[in-house]
Length: 202
Image 1 (cartoon, rainbow, N blue to C red):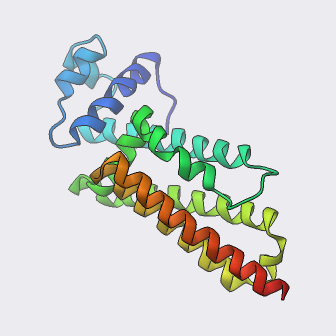
Image 2: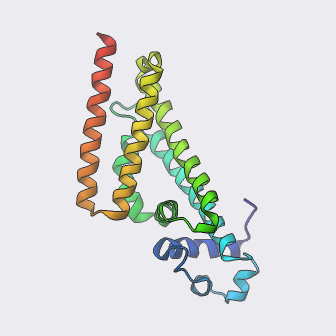
């Protein structure tokens, strides 16, 4: 992504919340321009089209959330328990506070038809990064699993399955429903990991 001017960054900062709330089709470049303190014609001096602005905001959102994921896993370094649990426990709070995450998930689940491939590719790379962090944390915390690569792959896939399920809950369910889903999936995941660890030591 090319370097943005201060005005372009301001437009993107306004646009991310607008796109998160309204989606692509219902969003208004005029309203975004007004929110950024300029006329619509001035917005076009920075972004040639709605697609161009949307994709730029998408790239910025991906960058913000990748940094956040890295921070969550970094904070867990040296702790016990299930790797990636901090990320899962903070996800609903992050969703409430971060327009970048709300925009990212809305866009991933309801991508504009004309740029669906671009959105899918970016979001898949984001999920792959989460998987990578989880894999590293699991190997650091549970060295025994390095001897069972198939099991490691299964747990990495299962963790992404939990993340995906919680993403859906964030979009469609109530906070109570989210909490219930998180508790159930975390319990099953933790128990499964403990059982496999016990078996490997037996």
